[in-house]
Image (spheres, rainbow, N blue to C red):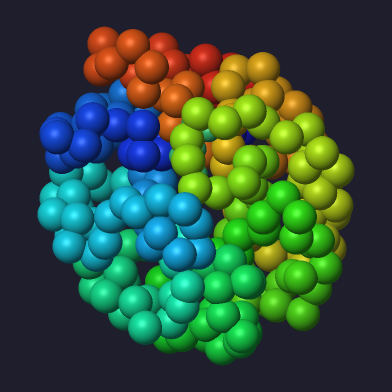
Length: 221
Ligand code: DX5
Ligand code: ZN
């Protein structure tokens, strides 16, 4: 298995042909498919809902890595699970009961993730480490693609790497925002094993997807 998993964010895809785009990144070597769900309330942008996730499901055999930037998230967990999500990740700030929300995701038979905003401390995870399958570190403020990577998050990635290793469990440590071949190397060196990338994967269009994904994986070189 590759040392770095790449989860292209379809936020940077051509929304007029999302199915083809998802098939193209799958063929180009995507390990997961990152789907950004935004509500115009938790974050200042609106994207896609469960119906679109369901429509995309037949276009890829890779796990759907669904990043919920919605509040509340609880009323929609079942709909995303039924639509074909494999991993459902939520922000602690999206509701008052993170533990209960993670229980719900697990009870739906899905992997559970927690997402930390740039200002959120890793200690938010201290008492739910046994309930997470993925931890996502935001290296930008969520809401839009194309932003600049925040190096201030590298220390958090290092701290989380230690926390994960102490559990002895398999928990993916993913980074999202401003990931390119240069910042990918910093993330890998800090202990990340999974990288989300929108701009860096989709730039140039379909003929470039394979090389773009390979360039990110080479950061683990
Ligand atoms: C932003 C999303 C990201 C975004 C990343 O809120 O969570 O997944 O698509 O885009 P890039 O890779 O362009 O920074
Ligand atoms: Zn995301």
